[in-house]
Length: 337
Ligand code: AMP
Ligand code: GLY
Image (cartoon, rainbow, N blue to C red; front, side, top):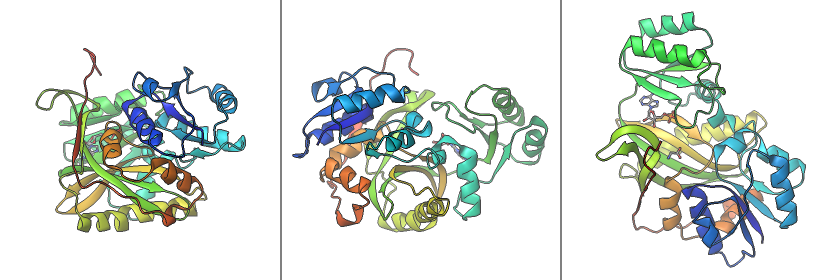
């Protein structure tokens, strides 16, 4: 098979690395790729927001299956676009991508389906938002509704800080967000939990923990992740059952009822408090750097897994993981993020 991977991160390098090990792979291209993918795939430099240009590349290279790495093209509807052109693509459609693309969508879905998450309010005007801030205890977590490249969440230790962050978002700090979500601050331990989903079933796809602060000893600004390890130390089978029963299955069922069954990688950002899981956020893709540590532990052919998922036959597969641990450390340019 000829595969195209879209994206330019460590995540896409890890996906290409694993796909390349498949005996079924013929040609592998990465759009636009990076120095790592250059060694194992053909990099094609193109703006990944230009779907027509991507379609032309896919036709030119006779691509059988497209794997989309990052959230932005998914949220912008690349799956709907390629499906219309009869191209097989692995990832959620534009509607289902709202699980990550709109925090208001995700929180409302939780509320309707009794999925445990932090108490919240959604506001599009400052007066109502400030009334919520006045009656709730600090810290308050202030979130932009739409994608914000990891910069849309502020944990505010005072009411004044929460009011300022709220004002910035409502004044248009993020083009993607006209709404603000205010949340109760949850104490606990964080866990990243991954599944792969098709229209008939889903399977566990690993656990990991990333470390977000840029500096030594967890200091400095948040990044997309300066390192990760897998499996996460908190993770165990009892917790997995609770996560699936209370969070994953109600979400998958709700998306089906909405007429947009989820298909793709689903990454749940969880807070674990007193052995109970709470959903902080959904990502509709693999994490980066989490994907790097997970691909090192995956023992089943990734091409076969993704091929099965796009044919809704995941239930026929047994996905195997190494029991060994893996870890990655990110080196970054001065000034990052
Ligand atoms: P998000 O982009 O929603 O994952 O938020 C980024 C980070 O903010 C999370 O990984 C958590 O560390 C933290 N966070 C978000 N929401 C909450 C919350 N309600 N309580 C405590 N921490 C939170
Ligand atoms: N490492 C966090 C993320 O990929 O969203």
